[in-house]
Image 1: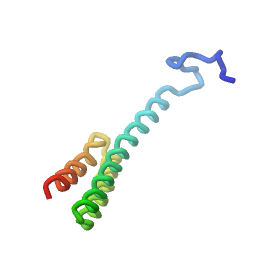
Image 2: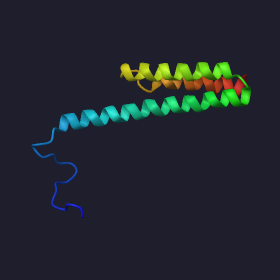
Image 3: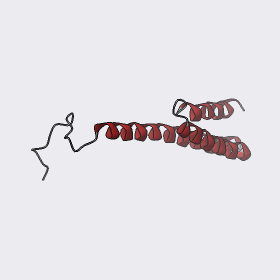
Length: 97
């Protein structure tokens, strides 16, 4: 059964480290944003390879998306914007090539 005598979600007990908890949450959210962007890039790269029969471009897109994700992870101000650039380039290639 659930413990109904615990504190509300907004309150922290003295044993809990609120700053570390918030930092971990922000890091997790940043990771999910970047990972979602990279996966979108991979799907677009597969579409480029399957629809346009440009498998070398698709491989290059996967490598570029992975590198952009790593760049976004190590440079927090860039974050999800690096995979976004690769996604836009792959979408443009898919639409106009």
